[in-house]
Length: 272
Ligand SMILES: O=C(O)C(=O)[C@@H](O)CO
Ligand SMILES: [Mg+2]
Image 1 (cartoon, rainbow, N blue to C red):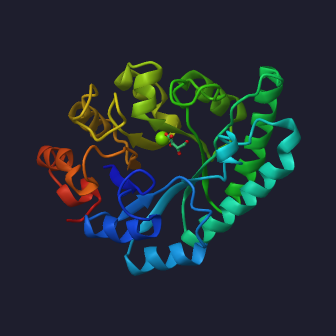
Image 2: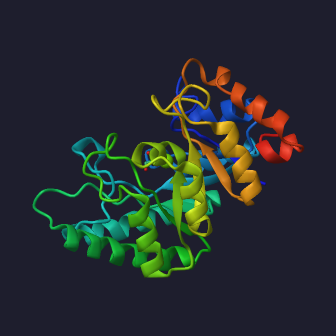
């Protein structure tokens, strides 16, 4: 049975980041994830999650200089040292927060960098990072991102991710399967999920178009949730959507999902 996780980068963004933990707890969540926590001291985050009885289930490696266009630094031959330091920093946060999974963004390939060279560096960096994370029992995730939202991002198809995981054969390297990106990249959501089910370490959701809550777009989420249950997926499903309206009013789809399921609390993982 899968469990929902509130993504605090996209949800509750009416409030400052550090206030979102309390809002997630009040809304009934037990599990949270976010994208980049690094501008906030890890001790402050730890206090929030401990006092609110929340579990942190996922965040990303530092992505480089986001304002300058970095979307990960794992493909650059001349930035290996910076990549190694980003792994150190991610592990420091993950250990303090007892977080079981970290997502490594690949990066946007500049014109001057040959694709073959970039893939080689990415493979080497993933092997390095997976080894470091394995020492702490942490799973390393890679996520294909759609090319409309992130032009030039190296990892832009499910097949590329599958190929990397199969080639590298690292026991703690898994795919972050984001239904929103998958819809925009290729569709065929249920068949695609089934095909790579064994390689998936985390799931995320949002509807399309707009990247809002389920029910606002074209993706048939009640079918997807039923299918996830039937497939035996027992990991987390991250709510990585930008609410249309207030966040607290964006959870109606969960009521409908709960009605469809026998064990409401377990399924939703939100305990309310
Ligand atoms: O954009 C997404 O989708 C994510 O999961 C972010 O963490 C960026 O990779
Ligand atoms: Mg995602």
